[in-house]
Image (cartoon, rainbow, N blue to C red; front, top):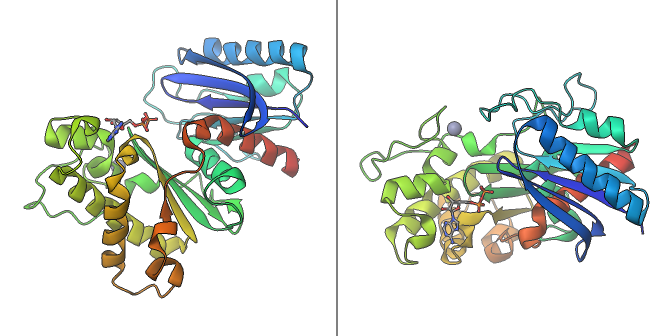
Amino acid sequence: MKLYGGIEAGGTKFVCAVGTGPGDIQAEVRFPTTQPAETIQQAIDFFQAQIAKRGPLAAIGVASFGPLDPHPDSPTFGHITTTPKPGWANADLVGPIQQTFNVPIGFDTDVNGAALSEGKWGAAQSLDTFLYFTIGTGIGGGALVNGRLLHGLLHPEMGHITLPHDWEADPYPGHCPYHGDCFEGMAAGPAIEERWQTKGQDLPPNHPAWELEAHYIALAMRSFICTLSPQRIILGGGVMAQPQLFSLVRQKTLAALNGYVQSPAILDNIETYIVPPGLGNQAGVLGAFALGMMAEADH
Ligand code: ADP
Ligand code: ZN
């Protein structure tokens, strides 16, 4: 079995691992995200120690916070682009790793990595067009379209779409620094916390927060179903840890579509159409492995 390296590069912590896939993560280390040079060096040190112990890596995948440049032909491939995170704007994440280890390096957003790994091993196996969302501190979406990750110009920013906002029913102005009441601004964890003055994890399951949350998620799902025609939608992230949200989102998505998209996958089987992730809390590292495997295959 070939061994892969993975880096889940988050804004607060890095998780590095070596392994072959789900159930076979052979070593893992976590450390806080400080300055790029120091943090990347810690990742390199980990992989060097692992290679000395276990043998060579076939590829390394980096699933990162963004925005970032995922285009291998671009001069800034492997860089973070415009983050407000101090020290990280225009940071070259892939370069130092590429120079140290002469193996294919996959690099993409954390949500794209998670989407790819859900297709390979999780809740979207055998599908070629599906969406993965994380609804947590922010909202991000990754799309597999015809079997490939959708990039386009940069990468999609599905959390920042506009949703109808009934200011009377919900006077909360939203918290997105760029758009105010975009999807993320209205429905990410910090919006729930600010609107109700209570963290999502501390609101009871029958609180009206969840009807409203499901309302916004369902409006977003309608837009994405109508634009990308996914065969399935996976919803993950801290907010979706509220189990009652899934049935609310399913009902409201059906209501929002109003019978227009005539597919039994939606009309008769909504509970297998909008689903939780299959890979749970390993999604980050497995996403990185999956990006490494894709880079190796594309090499
Ligand atoms: P991140 O997006 O930073 O990777 P998470 O996906 O865990 O992290 O999302 C964190 C957000 O999810 C926080 O805003 C938190 O309040 C919210 N959250 C965490 N657990 C729950 C829960 N059980 N129910 C509702 N919201 C939650
Ligand atoms: Zn926004």
